Image (cartoon, rainbow, N blue to C red; front, side):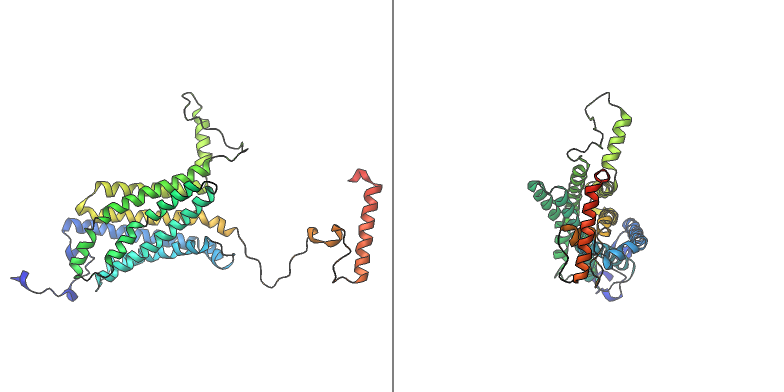
Length: 342
């Protein structure tokens, strides 16, 4: 019987491809996953190319801050994750374990950098509330449990390629941890949005939102909501949070044989969140110009010594110091004789 013969895995098609081990129905779902993966790769590439001047300026023409490194890591590792997934899912791969391990490593680094940026934003808006910052920090760490478990589950396993791929897609953590990641991500994003939407003390620019009034002006309420929640950072974070809802629904509704469908929503989630977090941080990073090198400091009115009552610096000659004293005396006499001009 053919079933008793030894299978030559070296001549087998890509173990990650549908024809290797999936049924025809699952093969169609897997092809849909590949289409979504390639679409996500194209969207991220388009975003990186369209924002290349800004990212180039942030990298080479601005002073690096605490946010610059995770910002750049999230950009490039998101591209690497989608590119590695596309290659391993569409080309023949001799070692299925290595392909999955590389993909999980890119996923882990990408999510880590995104969570670091989210946590920095949470610390910025909740700087005086340590308990909230600690809780959001725990949520950020909780979002990494899935990729960490996947990475170490793949590490050091020696199974035949086809059996290995079947084991990977049937792991329980592939169902539970994405749900937790989505819930934690929703909580973090909406917590930041809510804090940013609150008016600062003494700020009368925001209209009060009368949530409990049954006869409040709908137009005024809509204007208040738009002014508070749909501005730059808040809007980007809301989009990032909404991108996690389909992932949560997919992993709660689809079970067992719908693994490709679940992973498809994960790819969409990661692509959208990465782009939105980059938009949140791009403007602050662009607003920090680096000082030019080997350029003397600019002399302004504030650092002129003669306006502060001194007779000049030690580098001034005696004649220059005398001229500055005469100017100071003349200005003082003009002020005394013409007080109406002051």
